[in-house]
Image (cartoon, rainbow, N blue to C red; front, side, top):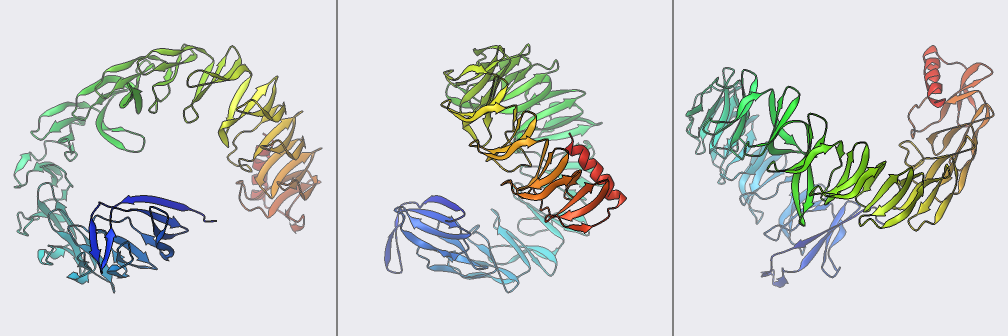
Length: 580
């Protein structure tokens, strides 16, 4: 059985081509297949076109019907019929950019066209792709230069660093830690008078000169004076930049007009789940102000925020959940319109749905995206499981489950309900008459109600197939089907690994396996492991017997008769943990 299987559908634009006398219907759908670090292609009917086991990697088919291929540790290009377009002989081979691809062979880089022909000789120590201006950064003899697609030197190989600023059609070069500018034709435009030059996507370039910041245009004319701002960022794609004056921050446009006055302690981009947006947040004392991408105020004086998505009239829209200075929460849209007033003690994320859980006056309920109450806010708690589309609700000390249409799945007769981590949708740990058991979605009892405690997920435990349980104040272990693995007769149970579970019974410690096979007999006043972290390999144990401390292996053989004072201190700490 294959360990992994990745399938990607690739649609090639429909046309007919003749290659080596073979007429090929290029409108076919090809399936890229990966099994155990080997790649291939099938056709739409599942017939093998490129077999597995031959290529270590295959890229998707590009817009020229070429496939970047890796065979062993060499790279090249093939077509769907495995005809080699670029021989698979190169140590490095980039994707094509501006019709050329950088390649490396025998320690040197050069450039190939789409027929695999050497266009620029292999002479460079390093090479980047060609950019939209038709220039490529290359390195020779420890220095950088720029070449065009004919291989002609545009900027000589004299520099420790080069930046091509495509938006302003300028080239910045660095020598002896000073920067100067060249034109894209390779003509020097300034002396080495700048200490720092920032990348830019706008029509102005941020530079630093003698510790002062300023902005230049594409002709190197000063558009925003040096020293006016102590701090500045590049202009973004909306042509706005964050600046500071006297440690107060604001936002300016390309004309140096203040879009947001320099009055904030700091300004940054609104944080999203795993990235930044183009909207802004200003910090002043203990409050925040949210701005849109153009610098317009969305909401002023809030304590906290996070981005969310909500379904409104069957459309998914961006919203922000915000918390006011009084601690109450609400929701605004990306234009600052209040969708849900800031009156709730808490609001869960919508996550693309049209209703969510809210808390008010210590009680829980549900509201929709228009602030209509769809479940009265009078419950002890409401837990939303969005993927499985149900709610666990506690009301008047009883717990039940309803689906997203509020149809009752579990009657309100239980003291507690928790979805099993190994099957959120179908199995639940429930408490009834002060005892825990497991039932499925139909209400069928999987594990009888006989335990005073039952674990769900445990970070350091034997996995999702087991539950730690307590019965009559004794500890044990059962499977998720209810089969007893370690009977509930022990005063303590501490899981290390599947081969080493420390147990206490009648004042004596011993060790068993996950299958309840005895490893170390119950004859010690103390047992702990030098490997303090569960799931690590354990071959040795510190033990105490008749006030004597020593070390044994997992065969109960003494391997060291004495322990150090430091080890004794560690044992005392471990035993305090075990006794908790």
